[in-house]
Length: 69
Image (cartoon, rainbow, N blue to C red; front, side, top):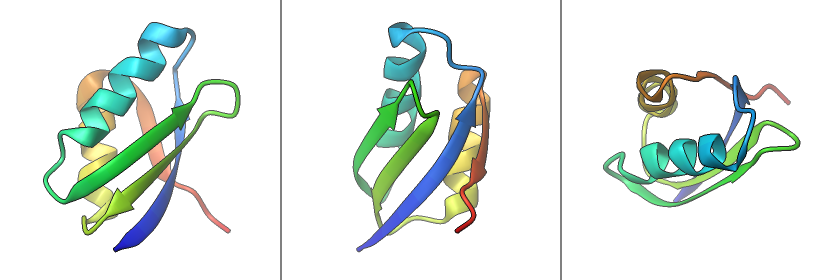
């Protein structure tokens, strides 16, 4: 199992945070996902292609990219 960190943009409230977390958790292969509204970070655990995670967040209406370093 791997851990992938994403930078999320466009979240402004708890509803946004919940929506992003729900979108990430529905991706096949994800075992857990936590989203921090204040830092704009998401941490995802599971065996999944990072690009698939980005696409799930974008489909939810937010920006996302794999965090560097």
